[in-house]
Image (spheres, rainbow, N blue to C red):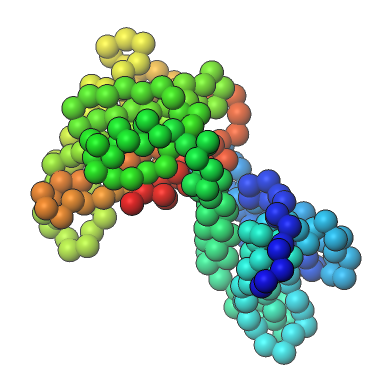
Length: 283
């Protein structure tokens, strides 16, 4: 469209939901986010009755419209209808029964999650003042990857094949770990599973570089996966993490990027999603 659109509104993971009379979509979008220590719903919903939407809701970044009855089942996506950036998802069905049978809950949650992650990433990627250029250059120099790092993450620690970057906050502590490990050929083609050798290397790097208050305390990740929970061995500390792996074609080694949160006094969904968004900017 040629006309200039107003800037969209809404907090992260805030969704305007219109016409969900039987709460089918509501239940899908308020399911708990996996790999968090406490229950937190994926979305905060603003419920609107059919035909009653207020003008201010038209500007919200993510909107979902449920239309029943309709000629056929469909899920249609459009961008920037009333504001920018904006995603509008229109779900149509002949009946409530068809909506229950045809709507894919996992795909709907994934679509909303990806939309919100794109927004969180754009906050830092389109605004140089919100980026820590020094840390970005350090990561690029040592690991050969480009990643946008939030300006608030000023504290750092560097060792061989390892960098720890943190906002070092007393409340809502966010951290990024970047490390390189030697990788062996996987026995199962295209398997995402870590080999025992890789797991041992990561455990060793964490034990050496992420100690607790005493020598017997150190960070561990019991189960390595894209998302999960980390712990502090010998202490009650812990929280959520997200992980990305990049295999280097020339050497076969892997770059492991881990974002993790320590915030026992507060909810953690948005904090870990902000780190996930930063990791999504990797090139």
